[in-house]
Image (cartoon, rainbow, N blue to C red; front, top):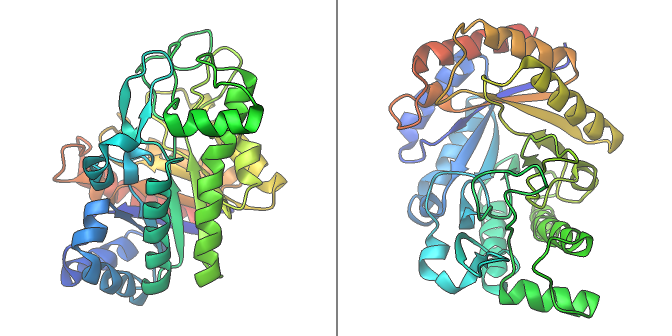
Length: 342
């Protein structure tokens, strides 16, 4: 068995005394780490408690990571973005329609400064063990995929910032078609902000571990989402990645897909001498037979996964995204973790 770390994400950033009890429950469920999901509102409103809650997690014996959850709606996550509310002119723009999308353009100077300030403040004042880049992505103007490539025919971002930077680099106007140059530009810019943020964090806190979690898609010739982080080798080789992580898979997918994604994740992590991480769906959806979770964890362990996390604490119990048998699911994850750590 290769799994060295087991963890769960956590939303409870309001009161330290509550978090202490929850952290003990995580330890009782065989977690060795916790991921604190920090929305822009949390960072703005609950700042004093965040520092204390991180300390409480460490006192409980957990490794504590900070998740830049939903920030700018460029990272994955449900919470709304204060930055987008206050800066509506900094949104990503659809290439074909010119529509402003509900996600920030991370090439805008205003957002970069905002995001870097958040990262540096967290690194300076919060004694966490690392940061988690949570499903960073370009917005998808359409919600379905076509067999010709991308999500439908449209893509982002073709805002004034991106168009100007593209023309400065290539010497001609950014086309509306997703050409090879546009794909390369998007990938480079998508990594640039994460690399820059990671270097700033490590300048303050050199031992901070940076986990970069990308969408777990096949990225095949026929269908690719073109989210900007599709070249996994490029991500794992970057300064934005000490641990290469791929996201949750639906239990409705065939187990061969679980194996394929995990094999690729571990292979690429080893190729670039970084850690490997996989995720378990611990909210919203569950397998018909909860024992299947043990089988999936066993598969991940056999394939060489080093870090294993579940989203989220208590199966999302009490939230709109709770699993049907949330607390039973949470108990099963704890049992599976116990076996994985032996």
